[in-house]
Picture 1 (cartoon, rainbow, N blue to C red):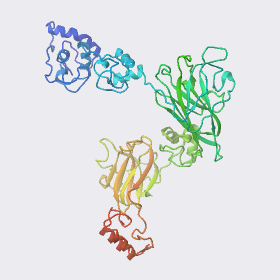
Picture 2 (tube, rainbow, N blue to C red):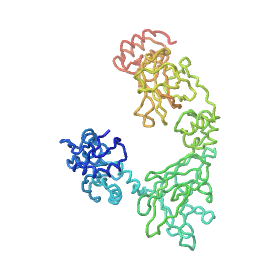
Picture 3 (cartoon, rainbow, N blue to C red):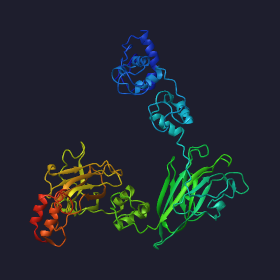
Picture 4 (tube, one colour):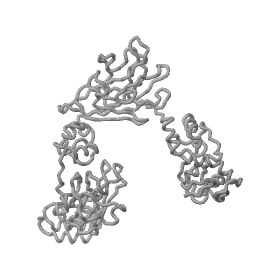
Length: 579
């Protein structure tokens, strides 16, 4: 709590505007001795004070002695403890800020990135922001200035038409709606066709009805013909749109693209659509019936097209549309992926559950199996307890991958070691695996799409009896860009040994994913000492081992990374015919 100068509020977080309004009068009253109540009137500014007076910083005082003294007469906390946000607000009221920078000066920072210096590199944007927030041009261009820049002057983008692209054929001020798919309720014709992976460079422009000068919503239609080589009636199509935004020609109205079957179908019936946001490209993909389609580009927010407001002398709003397609549209149900875990591919392994989900949410079978698909599966399907729900029923697993789901799993009673999880965390639902046939350095990870928070715990070949039974634990994976809350665990394995692996959720989360196991060395073989593959461990194998002494490779029978006496002992113990 601050000791206030010349006012009586004991709550430092009282309304700042009230404090600032009182500040000038309070300082004057204190200096003139007009107050009988105690107040702090001459708090000394620290002699070595640093930091900008108009921005918060952790040390007391600020670099301008005059301003510092004025602020601390109002609030002594600012000179004794820390120069926080309230001190900066008071400074804005009782101090004279530095002169503003010239918004047209060279070397100013990006308007849409916070930086410690004042002003930014787009003069018009800089002026608009600083008119509202003067300290952005006199003190620092902080996060508040950036936020205002996005509101007052959104980023400018003008797409570049790539080499070897196609160009839209449509005149401006067209009477008859140009290449509109359905002018005046009649299906259009003669649409330009898109070529797979070849950009179409076009413009949203002013168009009017025949005999009229009144503008109407501009809709540019392009034909897409989707082949069906495998004869299943389906094709996968992808659409990508990049558009001009933030210029005098385009303003801030975005564009969208919609895929319709027939020329006079309403845009709201589109089977696929993508909406531009700021300067980011918009894209969408999915499986649709093969044959002819129309990709329609329009200005506005889907599905409502807007009229382009300027005539042709004023400009146009440019865009680049790209389409691609393939025949990878077999049934997504019954293929791969756990129905109760997020994965990047469409569909899931349980055909019945998958079909039920996709009947309600078709994107789950055409794009990806995301969290909404998992949530639906939990509602409409009947998940059962996993077969490997307990340590005693651990599932055998070697190199490779396996899908897991913890939705109906039950948590084990053995807690994690104290150094395994963050303070306050605990293990939740889990499943178990028995790792076999591994040697050398082994990596186990749950990295994959989603946000599921998981942990991996490794034990010996017997079920654990206490937290201390764990020989290794992994509870984060900063290298997994898809989900840093996934887990990774590394350990060294020896041929012939088995290890129990526990895959658990952290806390009460429900989910799943893919468990992946890799190793630096190939998997162990049933007769690892048979180096020449003749089903016998004999002198030929002994010669091969001695020839590789000190190196690594197949003769490293126990997988410890070097051919040594331990491998020789293992070979001699296996002498004779392979089992």
